[in-house]
Image 1 (cartoon, rainbow, N blue to C red):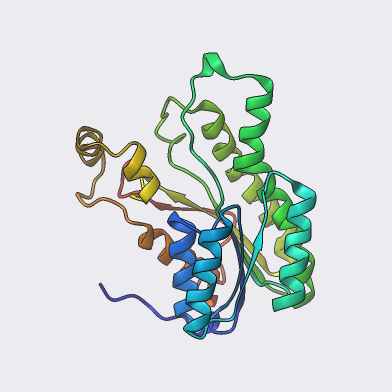
Image 2: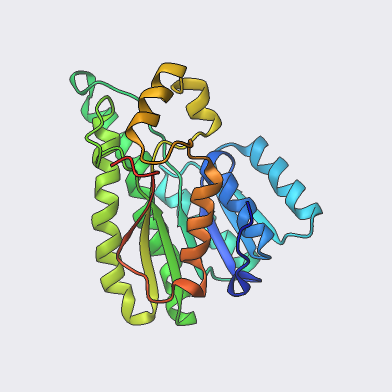
Length: 253
């Protein structure tokens, strides 16, 4: 396939959470190919350092901060460090999440709070951390990763789907509050994306066949397709797009 080049992303400063694997890593590499300056945060220190060194050798300006995003004070420090190294971001990709399966009967208050911290809370504080720099710049694009799991009424992970449903409300509220500064806020909604994690844990031949039947398109969704939508929403080409959901789910809702 042939994909677009976005001149407005060349030398743009982009911060991404959870970029050491899956959709986040593919997005990081896609922005690198556009000539963006990249800062990312992840828990996987070893993998992140390998990616950082690889992209740096290819000429990418890149910085990595090791951080557990559930620790909000550490998250704030990480963004401050990235800003000192790269300057304020004009693009934020709130990607980090984990769709661990769980039964509603077994959920405790502590587990519930940990799942919300993993899948929702850090997104709010990441926006809070980068928004002042975007306001000063008079522009910005914030892209939050949602999920079509709750649109499909998926079971087996009710705290995850609750968190992901809340992402959409957060997106629309921030889009209203930040829009006067020409900061756009959108949600990208993945279907079942064939990351290594999904392949290792849940993508059995039987499950894939059932899922193909539910999609309008016959092909499985690879991370690259999410990255391409994220690039579009980060670029000037989407200048009038905000407060909306952008579905990349092959017509499975």
